[in-house]
Image (tube, rainbow, N blue to C red; front, side, top):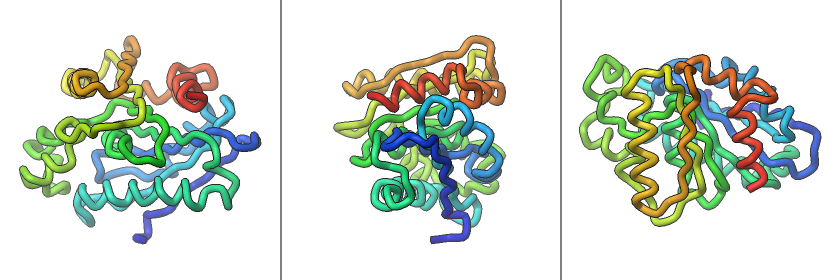
Length: 223
């Protein structure tokens, strides 16, 4: 494991509670799990345990390596989580922005029961064509390899794809197009646009006990 491959656990106090595993955003090159710790409040208040997954940032690793780190963290939660009092109930993987992308990369894993992808990026190619690629260092092949919309599995956990209607049109398009692609492929997908919210204010809906995203997470936690 690399130095940032750490997991922070918060327990709600309920036995065999569903586990909400959150992946932070920052275009795969900024931020840290600790920055988002306040958002645990919503899932905790709705009877979910919470895990924040850390990962190495670009340019220290490739995007493919980050995807592999997240998969390893998810497997660890299922294998070792019960020794730490979590992970015996349903596992809901979630993430915001780049974390929404990483959420999508886990949906075909046997360990994952459901996903909540918030303002995610599902076609990585546009990121290769702008300033973000200074640190991402994506090739066309790597962008294609790591784009969930290009790799729809035969089976997948159900996912809620959510975004704010005040977000950049490109981010809204990414969620809508991924939802359509999943439905066309016969995979479970729900689109949840949140009126007037932008790329940052949408996270208030996860932190608040009665927020739309806290409630969506809780619903996914019971199946």
